[in-house]
Amino acid sequence: MHVVEKDSPSFAQEHGGEVPVVCLVRQLSPMARLLNRSSFDLMTRINPSSQLNGTNALIEDAKDLLKVEIAGIKAPPFYYAPGREGALEWLRGLSHSRAPVSCTLLSRRILRPRVQEDGKLQKQQREQRGYAQKKINNQDNYDTIDPDMEQVAVARVLFRPGMSIIRKDLASSLLSFGRANVASGIHVDMSSMPTIDGSTKLGCIEADVKYLEDLAKYEFEAVKEKKGMWGVEDIRKTRHDLVEEADFETKAGFFKKLWRKIRRE
Image 1 (tube, rainbow, N blue to C red):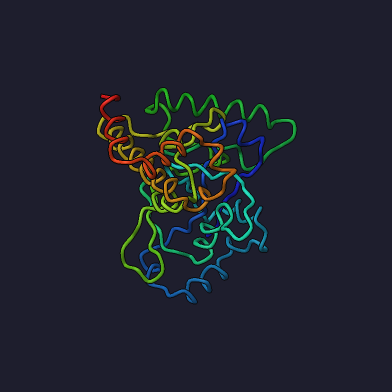
Image 2 (cartoon, rainbow, N blue to C red):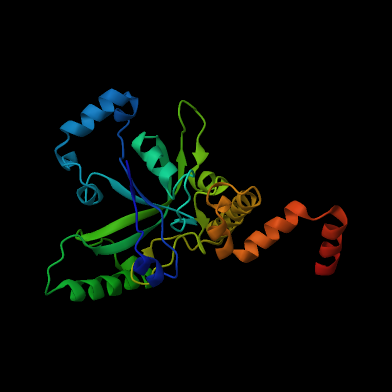
């Protein structure tokens, strides 16, 4: 339904240059999934909780929409390239088209309280961070979350493009076309906005690592082919190591690659 954009330099700096990609998703009942586009739009217009007066700030505060952070990726840096697709432009288009999506929940993130009172804000934030940390350390002692705390679902997201019946992994698709970067972990690490309820089972951790490795391959191919933002010279300069490796894979001859492999082994 909507892409929540955090393009503030201070926000990126606070979180190590990594900004999560967060979307607002409407959860449909089995009956609602059978609606066509016009019926769906009518349903959302007559829903009292959907009366948002058309402003982004209100949309992002909507209680009937789920906040979903796409696992494994971070938002691309801002860049200006005339004639090229802008950062997150394609994803915004996908949200406007109301593309069907499905989500696999991996963990959830705790955000600031929805209602912020001037004299209590800092105290509330300190309390919620301590609460979330206790939840991480000993999850069995905490079965509920304060309803005033905003929550974001960290999830793998599949989408169905156009009239296709086959779903695609959204993070992989964004990376393949140079529309996002691989994050340093399955979720963007934010000390002030911790994640909770993530699985600690070895099998789940191994699956997350494998998924990140696959995402890195998609990003590397996009760098090699100069897809999306990787066709912008200013962006390529920011990842000199990755670009240098991609250029070697693209331009080096067979014997150079073989010699390099022998030296590394």
